[in-house]
Image (cartoon, rainbow, N blue to C red):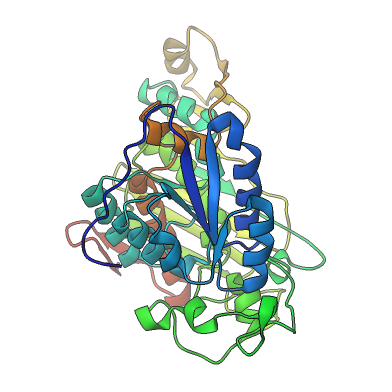
Length: 407
């Protein structure tokens, strides 16, 4: 891609939006199907798809009836594409997003925003510079409960929040990270032809320093979430879904960068050669004087609820918001909640993530469910947690230099 930003086609409130999808594994192909399904209602079309695995390109093309590419740069060269949806492994998210904006496209990027802290800050700055719409994809940020919780907290209805917790746990006979995006196909690889061909060098991205150059490894390709060079395991795949919406409730739509992060856990059961832990626990302290405790395990799916603790009361999330008075602070709680000791807040139906993205592009909405500011703040805390776990250290955020340092 060149250094100049390509001229973007102005999109009116009723103009059709043409999408290109980069990364057509399980998640990406799901998005292709969804875009086709909502094409008429939302006046959009998926005109092109791209993946480094020819079989995925072929399958996605059958769904959208569009063009298919093995090299994402060919897709970005097209002037008729207005928005790019990225559903690749994490280590490609930052480069693809920045290249897409450089080519004049709006971007929908699946979570996590990036693979590293440095990439998160660089991508945030690129969005500010290019002034493109970039939506990050953690679904929980579209749940109105968290936005209602934000209003309640701002109104002082539970007093000063001091901590919150949540979890995203799984348990299966065959760990899902060994099945997704799909089982290993022994016929596929860089040596294969036709639909079985995989452009391994492009997938690694070693030419751009995205991952180390290694010989083809089918396990790394098909089950990339098990290996640290490409992602952060349960932290970036699952906990990102929890922290982003909690930050909306606690700090607002742009989130907040951490003060200090610590993580613990281990690989206790899934000993199959993976890098990532199957049990992960992290704690984040924030400058606004509250702490968040998050858990993700692949060993037991019983979790802890999304809950925020304030001095006057406790706030429970999910499918609505419930506020309850706490301890000896009943009178203070009632003074903020119409004389009641328990209140139920019902949220409105918000647009789904892609619908919200489309509405913001068209100017019909001015608030993304997860903008790049929130995406970057979430990414920084979670990546710091991954590094805390790996380095056996508590890490701090240097807000002035925007880098993580040893606490």
